[in-house]
Image 1 (tube, each protein chain N blue to C red):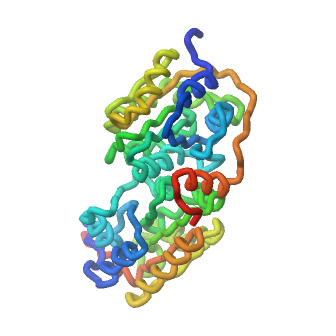
Image 2: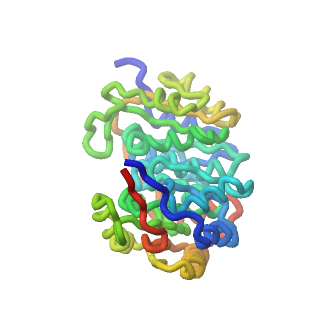
Image 3: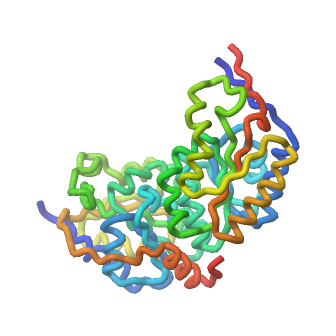
Amino acid sequence: MTVMQAVQGQSWQDEVLPILRSFDVRHVVYVPDAGHAAAIRGAEADNEITALALTTEEEGIGYLAGAWLGGERGALLMQSSGVGNCLNTLALQSMTKFPLLMLVTMRGDWAEFNPWQNPMGQATEAALHLMGVRTWRADHPEEVTPLIHGAATMAFNGDESCAVLLGQRLIGEKKWVK
Amino acid sequence: MTGLLDRRAVTAELLKDRGDLLVVTGLGSPSYDVMAAGDDDRNFYLWAAMGSAATVGFGLAMTQRTRPVLVLTGDGEMLMGLGALASIGQVLPPNLTVAVLDNGHYGETGMQQSHAGRGIELSRMAAAANFPWATIVDDMGGVADLRQRIHTMSGTGFAAIKIDVGEVTRVLPPRDGVHVKNRFRKALGHPTI
């Protein structure tokens, strides 16, 4: 099977990095997803931002805690499956209250071809709530900027743990062909 | 068994005349060891989030480029976050050293043997992740060399320090994570939020 890329080039994808920059985010750490491709590309091209690939999403929680100890802000980009990898490590944020901003592209919540994505995708928001993370969900392009703005405001002004879920309808149906 | 080092003697030597050194400790005994050597606002003690010591130190080293950063953790804690070695290996901040107090056992949970105690050599994993300096330390001379190397900030370092399994008195660091975070930031001149 060949995987075609998810629908590219929507304007909302190009809005993500400028919002992060407006909050003085200096570290964009990620496990890649097609929905984050524009933000990752932009972060890698930005001399004032460290863009860093992780082997697994929970590394980003530790990294951003350390960056905050050192005086700088960051954001963690991942797919919903990665939320499951993060759960125990989220205790680090609960106990130290450093600002944690997460952008999560959803799988398994709309028009998902691969049912193996469904269990974690459908548990993502509840799992985040169980660990004390506030969530907002964007399903339409015009919601992305205001929701990231709001989540970043509450993370960086209130030392909170905040996640914006970028719905699968927003990202587009992943095309699978033989 | 000869030559296995005393964890408290190792920690005291590593933290001697610490200057600008920033320290992150992995949960369990390394946190107690660093506390036993003397509490300091520039220590960040982990009590959970197993596997995160190296990544916390990594993020810190990336933002405090002019200060040496030491991650001091145990072999079990390092094993849970092995991917961090690969993530660090992409960037290799020269001011970061990861030192593992390696007794080959999970000390906090009843001294079960760890992978490190079954022949998996962590320093070789760091070498495979392109750490320019990755070594085994098995005598106090090596600990003194490691200490000096931490302060020279001349390339990302990794040391597997072979320590005795002997258990020592627990000296508990503060469990108030917000307090520890805020005083750490204050010591670096940062506001709490």
